[in-house]
Amino acid sequence: MLQIQAPADTTGVAALDAALNWLGAHPVTGTVLGVVAVLLVAYLADVVTRRRVLKLVSLLIKRSQYDWDDVLQEHRVFERLSHVIPGIVMYFGVQLVPGLAADVETFVQRLAAAFIVAVVALTIGAFLSATNDIYRQFEISKSRPIKGYLQVIKIVVYVLGTVVVVATLMDQNPLIFVSGIGAMTAVLMLVFKDTILSLVASVQIASNDMVRLGDWVEMPKLNADGDVIDIALHTVKIRNFDNTITTVPTSKFIDESFKNWRGMSESGARRIKRSIYIDKSTIRFLTDEEVNRFKRFKLLEDYVEKKQEEIRAFNESLGGSGEDVNWRRMTNIGTLRAYIVNYLRNHPKIDQSRTLLVRQLAPTPHGLPIELYVFCNDTRWVAYEGVQADIFDHIIALLPEFGLRLFQHPTGADWIASREQGAGLKEDRSPLSAPRSLRR
Picture 1 (cartoon, rainbow, N blue to C red):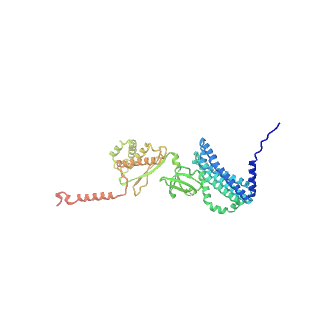
Picture 2 (picture 1 turned 180 degrees about the horizontal axis):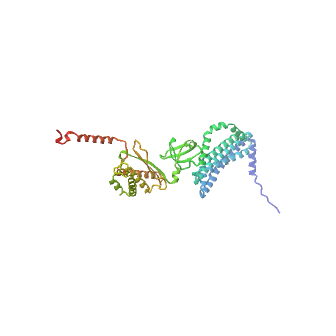
Picture 3 (picture 1 turned 30 degrees about the vertical axis):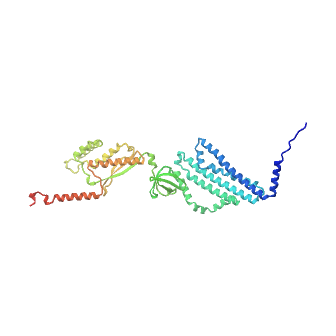
């Protein structure tokens, strides 16, 4: 049986042989074309990775129900990692270039390897930043921030990456550079002094739970009074209540004293400690009519009755007449203190489970201080100030009911009123104002 064979198509093979022969006759041109081909393949690999692979990864991330992959994409972790592909193409593709000198091939491979190491180091840095953002989504991050530790790891990665890049370019063992760094410890201690201090401070702050994100911190020496918005390795950022930002070195929280209001916020109560100054010239004993009038005050009814019984029993034990200076009597300042105590015990915004004290301090040239020491059950700043203002508004407005007056330094209006009053007295005492029978 006859078999018919189709003639083999030798056109392509012949063309390939002709091209190879021509390249063999022109080696420089072949080398240039090989280099161009490697560069073109590396570029195409980079384009395909960014426009195809990264788009596919982005699509998968959008469809994912997790949040951590979104954070990785925001910090461009996958994008930075994609730059490794062109480096790998260059590293292995340069070996296929015909006629390339061995020294040039080695140098290009070193460059490609150094590029890969740098990209990996930058990718790890982006991954650590994303790790911090992911960690901040958990409640524990407010009491145990890790940003400072991650920054230390990032510094170590960048330093090691730099050492490996330099060692690769110089074709040296990286351990030689590491040993050289060990010999330069003193210099490094001087250069990274602030970093080392900040690291130690960050460890102490975290271990002792001294500062958390969101804490209200007050540092008068540094003009910082506001909420902590960021805790990093070197600095702590505080947003003051005027919306300015104060950047405080982390080590200052160990060296300097500061006030953290977290305990007040967690306790649910904020202290009110303020005094009013009473004019000492208005303090006196109460008359019987005034005592009876105060009995009609609902907050003083029980107090007045008990006080009268106590005073009556004491005076009877002494004997003597009603004019005896040894007898006890009710005063307007003591009655005022009793009223304030009862008023605060019935106030809905005062925490009754904590210290409630209305005390008289030592007299001063500015009057007699009456101090209120209580706790408001609303720690919000605006609400707290409103409660405090309402309490003192009420007390100050009520002072005339007790025959008392606040102490205040004389003003221009006081001098004018005093002068007008003095002029009126002189006019009344003039001879023309006297009766006609007395003018002689």
